[in-house]
Length: 165
Image (cartoon, rainbow, N blue to C red):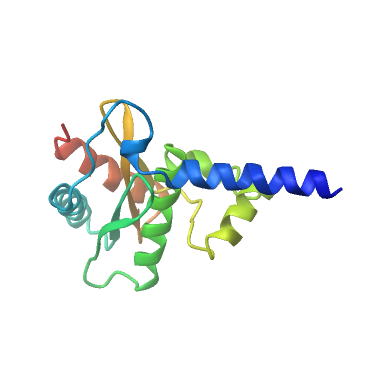
């Protein structure tokens, strides 16, 4: 019994280290990080798309570790939408997948454990997309405040509008 618990703790620790490792440590390949300027450009592009469609969103951009780079809440967007946008982006960055792909698995014991370990910060709802540069996830953008599809569409519009080289 103790051996099984010890192995589980060890595996979870290794997984946590892998998830939080600095991008420069992840191999010989050096990847560029997402900059604050790029994050702000993405937020502005998503905001412009949302405004054109009369939506009131919060938009967040995180780096590859899920650390917040920038967040904005449009006028009249509900205050809790900022935390939801951040949580969606964090989940997309952690897993390197659109948050919509994670939503179906959100009730699994592993995802529930992750939710507990992060203090409830992850949001497994549609509305965030990973930001990929050179085949490597360098961050994610998440939106919240409209329907799940509209949130994701704003994130897609931002990624299409901002060249990330």
